[in-house]
Each structure stands twice: as C-alpha cells, then as structure tokens.
Length: 235
Image: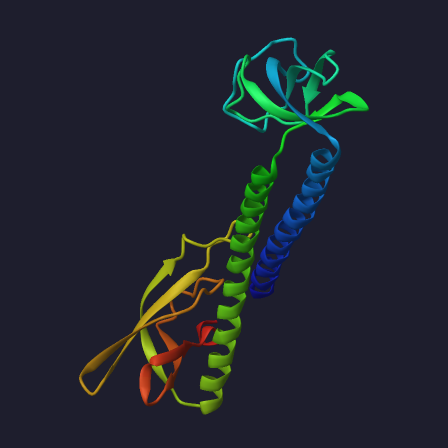
C-alpha cells in the first residue's frame, strides 16, 4: 500500500503540472487568436439578438452555467452599412437578449466576430494555474513528508535505541483512504521515571491482532518527542 500511496502523490504532481501547462498553452493560443482579431478586425457595437441553447430550438434569456453550450447571435452594421447577424464565439452568464456588446469582425468575412477577452483569458490562466498549483502542492508536500519520515525512521532505527510501549488504542483513520481502505493509527504509552510518554503511529495499513499488547518505539534518547513506531513489531 505504501508504494500505491507514493504513486498516488506522483499522480497528483503530474495532474497539477498538466493543469498548469495546459493553462499556459490554451491561454497563449487564445491570446494569439484574440490579438489577430484586434490587429485586423474592425471594432463596432452589436446587439445580442438571440441566445439559443445549442442543439435546441429553445431560446434562453440567460443562464447561470457557462458549461452549457449556447449560440449567441449578434446583429450589427458593417462600415459600409450592411446589416449582419452572426454567431459570437463567446458566451458569458451576464449576456441577455437586447444587450449591446463591443465586438470585432473580420472585414473580409463579417460572419466571423469575436470580443476582446484579454482579461477573461487572464482569469482563465489564473484559474487553471491556481487549480494546478493546488493539486501539485498536495502531491509534492505529501511526498516530502514521506521522504522526511523515511529519513527519520532510518536514523532512529540505526541508532538502535528503543522501548516497548503498551498499546492503548487502535483507531481507523477516516480522514484518509486508498483503494477504499482506511489505515490505522496505533496509540501507545510508556512510563519512565514516573513520567508518561504517549505515542501515535503513522498510517499503518493493517490492523494489529487483539493479542498484540506492545509495540516497539525507536526513540531519540535525548528527546522522546522524536520517535518512530515500528510497524513490523505489530505483525
């Protein structure tokens, strides 16, 4: 299970990077397309004449979801006075029939129209980047914890100093799951020089037998707050 856990965090890192890179690539493509229209297109005002749910004949005035595809029809006059109705390549939830919007149209092909979405493109990049960074950091920080834990574990085991602590409780960790399984945390206690020391294990992917009463704890002899609960001693 530990290898699967590490693999899961690597997947998180990969997905995070994919989101971030995809965001940059799509943003770059959208910006390039938008800039072409700004450079060669003609700016004018258009009226939203209709908003139609794609694949349906039902006209809609507005919607709260940009995930549902809509065709936004705009009507405008070209510089030579020709009235054109074209489908806008953009839809936002605040669009309503009758609204006036600023568009750019291709003078050679007035049916091709767009809006200046520079700021929207930046928002798109920020959203993709934020989501990607968040997923990446989940995977990266989790892997970092595992590697730090392994380093500490090896150091304590190599020191050879340990005690046998009494198991006080075995709790299923409901906050984490892998393959629909929850790990366990082993709680134990050791009394030395009339002082009680309590320990909690890392996530252990098996439940110790009810007959297992003690667990081996590797310690820093100078600081009992630095320890490793030896899961092999529970088998």
